[in-house]
Image 1 (cartoon, helix red, strand yellow):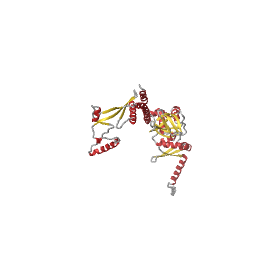
Image 2 (tube, one colour):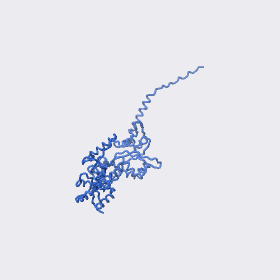
Image 3 (cartoon, rainbow, N blue to C red):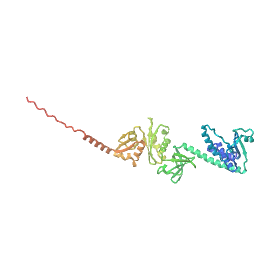
Image 4 (spheres, rainbow, N blue to C red):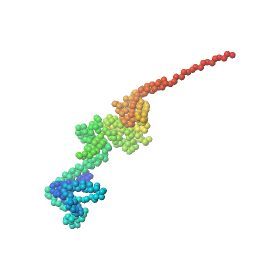
Length: 409
């Protein structure tokens, strides 16, 4: 077995390429090289490459057609004009005019001439005329074959990587931090390298070379230099996927994630639900002694995660979403999807959260506009309303009946 054949077979096995496709690509490149340096007018060059010997056979290949008048022969350089003419003729065919076919001497040979080459030739046959292969072409052919194999290998690898990661788009994968280029972090994904842009990084999270991290494949696109894989650490989806990966009850469908609200690197809220009476959705996510939730927090670089019980009743759902704050009462406006939440003065700051974060995440999670009101203010407003209502009541004077006069006997 020759060196070239070994190389081709090894490449095909390792990279999953088609042997026939690689040989075909080599032959096309060899034909182009021959045409450029040794080809003549009206030759349709085809090359048969033998990987066993590394040698090539070159042919001028033409299809046998019927004899045609001289004026119907296409001269060199007229092929494109003829193609346009044929298209126009096809369009006019609807009016009853038959398309006029023209003879192309580069790819065709007329039957009379074909019989001089091969007596048994008939219309539709392929006539192959062997051409001389100069010694210089033989040396060039080996080098060309090598270059084409390398090029074909690169193209195939790019196609395979693109197809592989296109299937993983919007999925969570593991990678190893390779290096930094400015503020951009490059992550080794195995077959390719993904890009983690600055706006997709968790604020304050450090990415050291060699660190293994989970990343969300946000977008995969095909570029000139190969596939571009854009990664994310801030997406809501990565939080969902980490839950799927770390909590079996979620991955097998026993517990369902109903909603996620996230401020990457700081805090998240995840609403969970189950229709099974025997399963505690929050307990399952937290795990024994908090083991599961701690693993998730570590994966997210120390981000705090609140697990909320989902409820179809908006009052209960909003109350749960504001956890750990304790709620006194909630008044809702279904039409405007607005909720007024009443809390005690001690719980007010906890309900709102640092910088309004708790209330903001609760609103995002539930989809309701939430206003948090202190209990004392609410009581004052109720007292004023009661006083106003009291003042509007009509005054009824009580009349004391006069004592009856004693009757003298």
